[in-house]
Length: 295
Image (cartoon, rainbow, N blue to C red; front, side, top):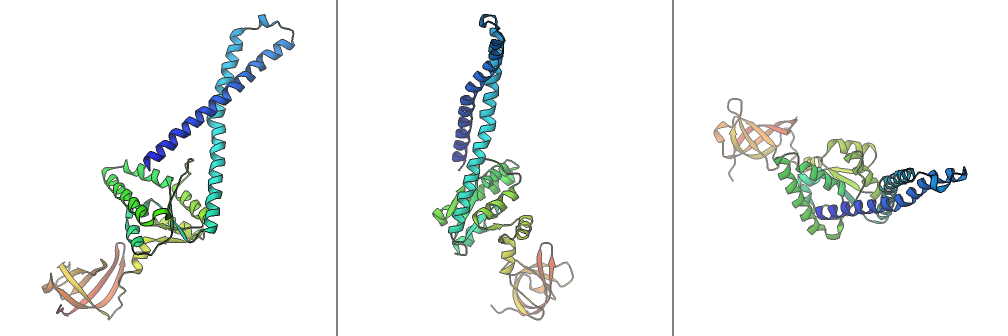
């Protein structure tokens, strides 16, 4: 992917240079004539016209022409190409089945790979070149991010194998104002749902009536749902903060704090749910000891 992006950047610079060169010559001639013609019309002989000034205005015209071609015309061409790309994506979205846009948070998280393996998302996936650019930028932030990005690249390669042609890489040459705005626009243009872990992106997508799946929210749905009075099994792993308390974890990772169970650490017990508390780090189950599990 990096090689493709570098090739596109090199080709883009070459085309801009060619456009600049093509426009510099006629604009240079135009500036030369704009200087010479008024003097000729006033009766000044050609031999009396300063060759230095002719050369100066020609160079000024060449420079201005190159800037026009290199920047302005190139920008217009890129804008038109971007518009054509958006139209193509829009048409493709109209006639294709359900599709999804994945952002960098989904790639770095990695759970999307397992969800695809399970067959929950057997659909078209779009990943933008802007997302790749963001991953490259994050990799330079710190060694920790570099390792996460490396794992993210492995996730993308795995998705390529799992999805084949259903994983579509969309290339953009003009950087967006914000990554969030770009993801929202790509989802709208392709009539896709967004898969993310970004809570701000989730909220904004729902405000704009764009379908969004937040993987953290999806994970909560699959957690064990306990109510007061319900019994459950848990393996206790350490003592709690209070006397006679013991702490264990359910199969989905939810913490369970059990009263009167400090003598059963490293054993599996049965407990009765007293209450469930929602904390900043997730749900915590409070229970009371019933008996040691026989299994």
